[in-house]
Picture 1 (cartoon, rainbow, N blue to C red):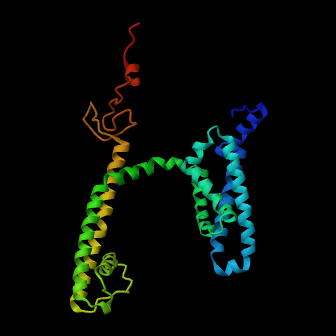
Picture 2: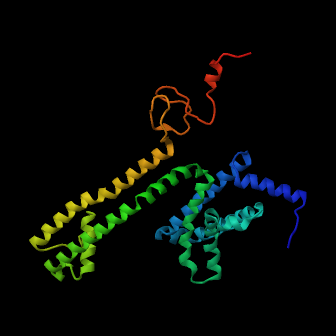
Picture 3: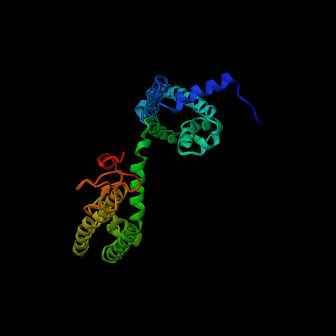
Length: 292
């Protein structure tokens, strides 16, 4: 069913939109600051409520505070939906889903008796701060890291395949060398030991007892130090490559042949030659004598 907003309603919706979704007015800034405070307080209540001593002493207070936060966030969500022309698209977006998660778990407790386990999902409210603080300016950096991760995916998968083979080999050796009394009851359990030893975590729940087993453990630990650095180096190299491609141009200077200029550079850093082929050098035009 189609309907038309009255001019007054349209004006109200526009004002609310500027306050809720923007931050360039005093009202919008005050709204963002208040919302940040509510989000941090609600997260603090959830964290303190998980501490048994605080839960026993202030449990009732935490309960009422949580419902107060839920009602306020629900009103805010309704206002966000009211301000938008296509609210369905907003609710399907990342931040729309986060806004729903901020309020749905508490309401579900009233409707579904076994939904208390979902209450912990409310901690995702802290993600809303990213939007409020306008951290979208870092999307370019995040895209750069994702691009580097995609480029290094094959090398990383190959690396983990090699690690899996090493873990399986050492686990099979230790399963045949050590006794079940030492914790090596099966090859999968020995694989757990191999991963713990290779990462140098060393929980101590499974410990080799024989001299040969201890020698193999030492070799695996030393091997783990060198292996851990491999994916870091591969990913770092791809990050550097992505940064260069993002920031620097592959085209050489027509004047001196110098490469690796910044993409936004208009003049060569080395010789000062004009680099923008789509437009004329303004300084050159000023230097040419007039024909009039």
